[in-house]
Length: 537
Image (cartoon, rainbow, N blue to C red):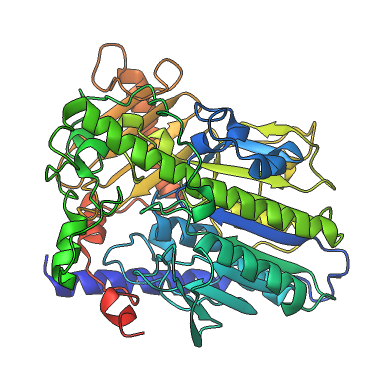
């Protein structure tokens, strides 16, 4: 297909996005806001479930997160919350709209264009219902935030923001370079400042409090660099996965051993390099080029050195987020806001911390597919509650609106799980969740795929430049090492799961042809925040 066809296809998606917003139902105009709960929606970037000690996973004792855990301990911990497309921008847009990527129009980070801010989002619904709304921190959607009374979001480094000297856009107008604080501390400072002096305290508020950390390149603040300095951290169980029986997994570019670059692992460049030479030096390793910090470090020892450098910096960044969460909780308590504020902690997706030998996300495998999610609201939720039902990130928006007593727009594809937050209440829950990832080959050569996950099983189809299926029994094989597809005795199960995929594709209007799915991957629409533009600031 030529680029003209790609652009036409993109226009059709945008048209669909705008048209689906017309069924928005305005909340009752006489709805009282005097007793409505406030919302603090806290979101980190790439925070793995295993790196939150409330989940009691393999890193819990090594790297505790007491402030984040407090939200779960005083509220409810969700153990099976999944995203619809495991990459930063698409997950964020799904959360904002309550819709799958192919509906909201933002389906990949790379060359997929920017978020259509004219469409309905849950902050807009809160705003129209009398709430003061704000987003502070990471945005990564290109276009200026809409639906917020106040916004201060990172715009440098392709919209990713940086850990040091981040550049923010305030209220869509003013560009501010913050040099005094690490980005995590800066976001915390700005959020507390807005709560304290920037809002109308006679109105309820909805604050999106969003961190860059612990996203790549994992650069912690100085105060956390002394953590994890006594010896090596353990490897996850499937650290040395050889990808037997999983062709797509064998072709990726996200192995800690082979695809981490010098910048990731803090190797200082030689002096006197031009900008082009510096970029080449820092990025060396992205596509499997061999390098070592010294000639004596080779083989398994080199892989372990890369892992230790990576995982320790990642967890140090998490420690910074945990501190910032604690500051928010203490502010709310000190200002008598804690118990009338719904507090959520989540991440835009999960992340690989050495599982399968990987870093990054994108796959439908559990570590990136699963998201942390916990919620505190004592008026409704009993402390130390646990929910193990199948939930999706498109459910967040309708749930928050429902909790605030605000009508949910009819075109949101997610469903409220408010009733699941109440103790001893029997509710109908999902029997499966559907996933679809589009981006290829940048940045990590992960094949586009869709699939379904039930309580026990998972079926994945890789369809872009291969036709491969994977079937996992998550009860017997929680690390997803053994592909059962095509093995004896699995025919009926496989057909049942394929039928479920078709059913969900129809339900979510993702039942397009494989050719059209591939066209979504191939489409080229440049992003707003590219490096050339940011370098002019």
